[in-house]
Image: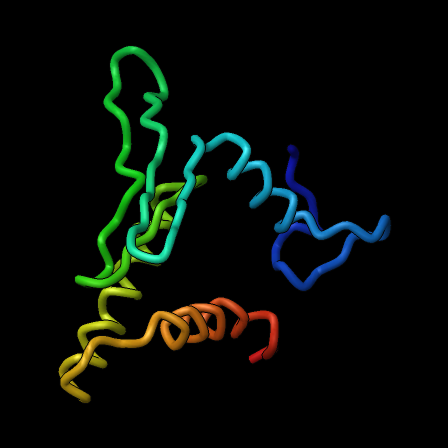
Length: 124
């Protein structure tokens, strides 16, 4: 994909009605390796495919522990996932320090969603 004047922000539409930032994100996920999670009443299994970019490089971590009761699996850009996991770990530690209990998974998901929607909801 080549860059143009309409790919500077996720809120900028091209004349054809396309959001190039969303297309770039989808392409990054397509270039990543597969990740899957399964859950039942008692157990959860999370797995990520280890695929090296070439023969001389090693694979990248796809499974990250966030807290003692949750983790994430990534597909796409590893640098973005490391930033996201660092933010999630910080939020878990802040909640545990403030309230003395682990953060609820739903609460953390809402915090992450709010953080990533901030740039599309304000033009400051």
